[in-house]
Length: 76
Image (cartoon, rainbow, N blue to C red; front, side, top):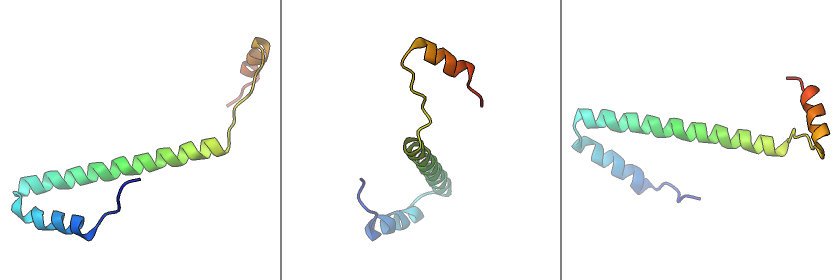
C-alpha cells in the first residue's frame, strides 16, 4: 500500500500554486482531474473484479461435447 497523505504534502502543494502562472495552475487542475478519474475507474475495476471472484459464473466442462452443449444452451 502507499503511504498516507500528510499535511506537509497538502501544504506543499498549496504553497507552490501561487508561484505558478495561471496557465500552469489550469494544467495542474486538469492533471488532478485526470488522476481523480483514473483512481475512480480503478476502484470500479477492483470492485467489479472482486465481485466476479466472489460470485463466479463459470461452467466446468470436462469434454468437448460438454463444451458444445454449454455453447448451444447458452442464453444471455
